[in-house]
Length: 316
Image (cartoon, rainbow, N blue to C red):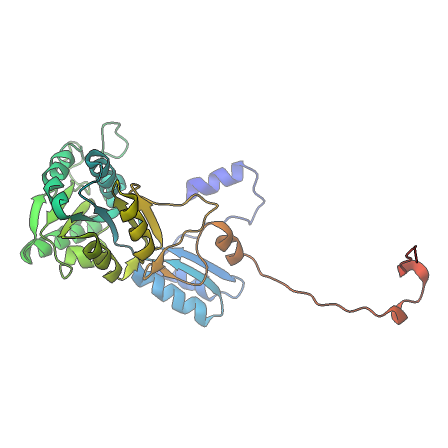
């Protein structure tokens, strides 16, 4: 945030246009309650987002909150296998899985379940290391608390009967003995009741679920409370059309693992991933930051005392 503000100052932004307020709950409460702040836009966890939404609405503020996610990637048997594996692993492990559009669930349909070992073999090639090192594929997670939470979810899921295909826990990076590192982790045999499926992990963990049909995959995704993003990998236009029409998620990628829209389109997440009537990006974002006015006026000619305001029309 400080880097962005520094660039804004260098670009010549007037004073007061952009400000940074550091802090925790006290700072958030101030923003949500101060009468001079008329609109609040939030991106973060569902727990915090719901609290901010409640405080802002009670204070009569305009508010939009982008909350948690559980993004699925569905792989059909006819998918371009290399494209699907590379795309999904990149979306799952990029930024160490710490982004709201990360793919955290891979749904293998029918015979696509045979792709699982190739997912694992490819993931084993990823190098964990310091985030600034050129050879690093996966950097650290944000805090020790985050690392412990991720490891706890993984273990709880294994205890519940899931299979740990690739275990990234305990990875060591030379020169960073106290680093918050966890390697790529893949869990299979997962059910919807397990912690790794129910919770947003926010780490380099890919959960694998196998289903028999596209219909079953659509039902699985639609049953999830979150609706941020989803992807389908297939070479069938018919399957893609059915998926786009029936899926209940706001942002859909067809052979695109992270379907983030360009800024002139709206960020169209849905269900439990968004609170508020306005979306991020595009026209909806402009509307969020705009107060609309309508003026209805009437003027009577008898009120005009001079010819200064008269209008003369030529012709018949």
